[in-house]
Image (tube, rainbow, N blue to C red; front, side, top):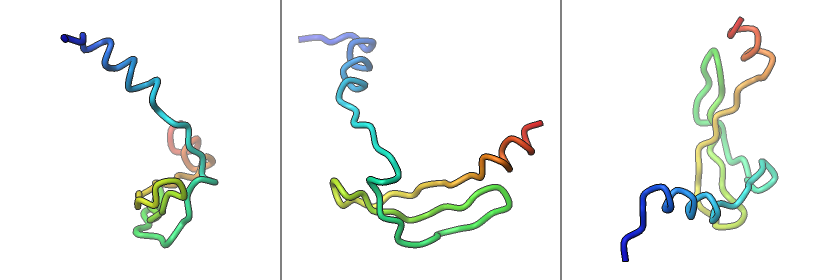
Length: 65
């Protein structure tokens, strides 16, 4: 059975789970730059490790103007 690429995208989006910062445990800071910090985190649901980039909203607005 052939599935059109556009139908595949719709199916992928339907299967996504919305996550928030409460779904992660921040283990440590991997790197710090002038613009952002990168944290090593572990998902509480699947226990996999992810990198999350944290950008200050204030700095983002200031530097974009």
